[in-house]
Length: 212
Image (tube, rainbow, N blue to C red; front, side, top):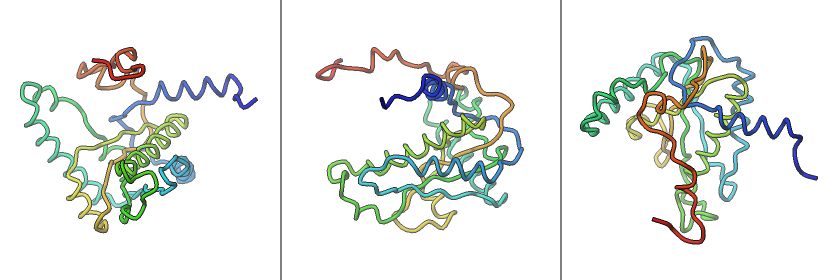
């Protein structure tokens, strides 16, 4: 009775499977009406206690975009220093498309979250989970619309917060690169580059209790 038609169900599973964390973009602009649709999709995400903790900052100023890129460059080098024998391998990876993509969005947690207790008294990190759901909605909608998106987490949150004039208590979670692409990766990029591989589902699903 409540089941979607087969073709709609197939499309949902298809967009989930074909979503990719993109790093390579074309410079073509994103239509403003399309960007609005994607943000509406993000805004329809579930949130604990209906707190809607997500905030999105569209980076329209090219100089500001370059400053964000510099923050990512700096953290990329700091991360490489912590990777030991995989340092050179990591530095060969393309980890962002900030300077290339049509749109850059910064997804952030709002300030004043401590007043929201519903669903967060024992799990305060559920505000972060809610923002992650909004980002996933945006990601899936973008893929369905033929746009690529990449989630960049290589930055100092305090530095990015200061750069964007965020209030105390707010926190940037992701720099989102969004835009047209020449093609989507056949596999997740880090799998294609032999950095990591998807684990078998059977190793991650337990029954009744934790399994070693």
